[in-house]
Image (cartoon, one colour):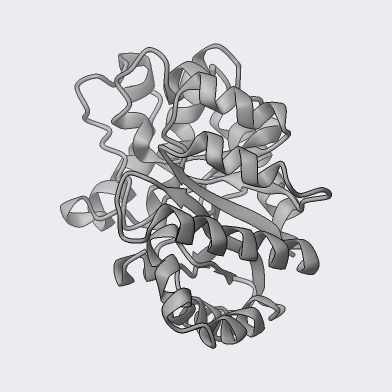
Length: 274
């Protein structure tokens, strides 16, 4: 990823919709992983970090092989609770596919040796991602983060007992075969669901014309207040999480508290948070 990703919050945890209580700051390069770790030490038990080499940044390890050793040290830190985002992205060509695959596998080996959950970034590369993951036995928990694919693609992940993390992309998905369908028809169970902001991206546009009315009315005034007050110029912030949870709940025909508690429990369990 480019440096703009270094401040994103991957999985924001809200136990009761009143506030975001824990934030994970992901690293997407050696440099940003180091910065994420620094933040987690400044705000212990509130901010946690991950260490990842995003597919776009894979070539940096090839160009400077010694940086991998620094990355391993960062990933081994107690405050680092997951490896990733890592994976494959064929929508852009910042790094060649073969380079992406090589660095992806190195991170999977590291995650397996450390026993830390894996955050997967995948864009237009599902079969290659699955082929690589299938090489490994006894993988730690796998989370497909910021999922934007089809219901059919989601089922392939769920069949392998992976977790799927959703964002404000719900507002942008206008297809009949995508994320909304997963929630509408009950394909995605609560025990496999996580929620994230992916800030500063994936702003949940609650005024989107294609958003069903029952979903719009399911968003509380309090959530809208925080969303519109702090997410200026559609820059997503962790405070948007309650609105995202409420939208997911409306699609699933469940209460927001049920979704908040289930997804928070999943995150606490997966990442070993206290």
